[in-house]
Amino acid sequence: MNMARIWPFGKKPTEPRQVKQPKKRKIVEYERKPDDSSGEMMADRSHLEDAAFKDAMALLGDDSKKQ
Image 1 (cartoon, helix red, strand yellow):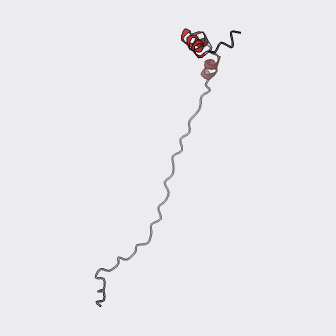
Image 2 (cartoon, rainbow, N blue to C red):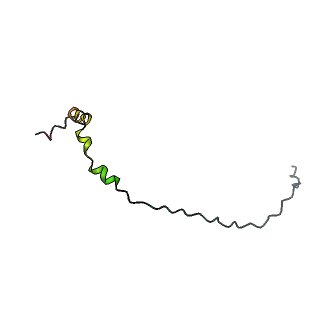
Image 3 (cartoon, rainbow, N blue to C red):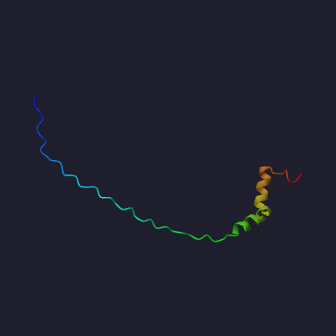
């Protein structure tokens, strides 16, 4: 049996590990302005008088309010 030859290439010397400093994260702060438009949207009930809405409700059979 033939023995394997000695590996002809040597190992490179290991370099000491460099500790990477973590980058500082830039913190972004936003200012939230008071928004009253959602209250206005909820109070707006004009879509209930819309003809398309009434036709759709009649088609779906929501006649329980008429009784």
